[in-house]
Each structure stands twice: as C-alpha cells, then as structure tokens.
Figure 1 (spheres, rainbow, N blue to C red):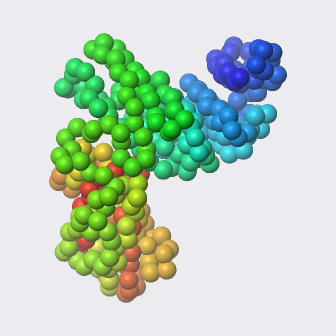
Figure 2 (figure 1 turned 60 degrees about the vertical axis):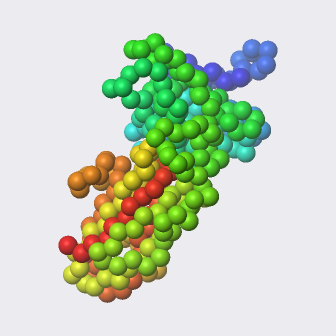
Length: 303
C-alpha cells in the first residue's frame, strides 16, 4: 500500500509511505530527492509489474520501482504541466491514463510514451447537465480489466454529477455530440492518406488510432517562401494537429504543434509552418496529432 503525504512543516515536506497489507510501515521516501517541487500528487500502482507511478500538477510523470528507486523521471513534463493532472490510473497491458484539467484524458504506454487523448471540455455557456464525452474537473478515475475507463465528477456550480465510460480502442465508446455520421477507424481511406502534393493544393484526410500520421511530399527551390497549414475540420473539434517538416533523408527541419499567428478560421491547436528552403529537392510534410481523432485539412502554398 502506497500513500502520499504533502505539506509537512518539518522536512521532508513531501513524503511517500509504503505499508504492508497489515498496515506496518515499511519505508518513507523523500519525494523532493526524486523531483523537487512536486505538489498535488496522485499515485497509481502497476500490480503486475514492479512499477509505481507518481504525477502532480508540476514535474511530469515519475516511474519508480516498488522499493522507491526512480526509474524514469519528468516524463512528458511540458505537456503534463500544461494539462494539469488531476488523477491517474493503470490498467491491463500497461495502459496508463491521466485525467487532466485542460486536456481531458491522456493515454500513455507503460514507459510514458504519449498515445492518445479523449474528451471535450464542458460547455459552461450552455450550462446544465454534462453531455457525452464532456469533462470539467475529472478527479475520479478507474480502469476495468477489459480496459474500459470510468470517471466521475460533480459540477460545483450547477450541482450536476456524472459518471461516464469510454475506451481508447479505436473511437470512444460514447456517442460524441455533433457527429453525423459517426467516424470510425474503418473510414481512414476517406479523403487522402498522404502522397505527392503541389503548391496551391488543399487536401483532406483523417487521423485516428489506426492512422496516427501521414506523409506528403513536394518539390521546392531555393528562395521559395513556403506556407504549410494544418487544421481540424471535424465537427467535434477535438483533433489537436502537429506539423513536422522533413528533408528527403527524413531529417527534421521544423515542426509546429500550436500555431502562434492564426489565419482566419484556425484555432490555437491547429498548426502553421513557414520556411524557405536552402537547396532544391524533395521535402516531406508529416501530418500527425498531439491527440484526438478526426478530419484535417492540409494546405501548401507559395507566398
């Protein structure tokens, strides 16, 4: 049994306790010796492996073994600091799910690699009850033996409470609002799925669990002022796009996750890249995602 105790007046201020099944204290770990400054911590124990996961509002995800030795620290720290973790749970086959305040539910592999994201922020302007797939401050999280994720929460403003269930196996188990018709992984062939592209062209495709990235190739000359844009055009607007520009040898030249200067009709999680090639040749546009599933629109222009 593992327990976190925070805010002690006498050092160590952030403590991790380990007890046996009878409640006898076996060990106390000073968490500041692992990652200083962590706070509002949550734990998940992988019962089939020698693993303990610790996550808080700062410092990313920490992986420890059962004697408290750090194995990997500060996993996805930048992403998780922005997302603000509220709870964590582990499930079969090493699945890790983190419930967050700003990014819904984030799925990770057993070594902390980012796989997927689910959830739609609660619409406070609409008010009322939660809709399927919506979250506000999901702090109650659990995963069943068949990998179904359950979460529960209560809206302190409206008093509405909810319990929902979903799965990262393909699309959500829930019916997503506004999706007509529903999009599932079998529809990845709709639109395009990569290939050659030329200046002045706009194409559409779908990113999902079966097709998380697609490559487009184009030719460019020195001095070309190239603009590449990628945006979510799905009805539910949950796709968080990422653009990666590569040379012909698959070396990364540039990337963009969230656009700073937004063209008309774009949102902050869409992607924009500008560059001027130094040499003539073939270049690769890799269309991928930080999370979510849905239809995208890719445009390549010469300014």
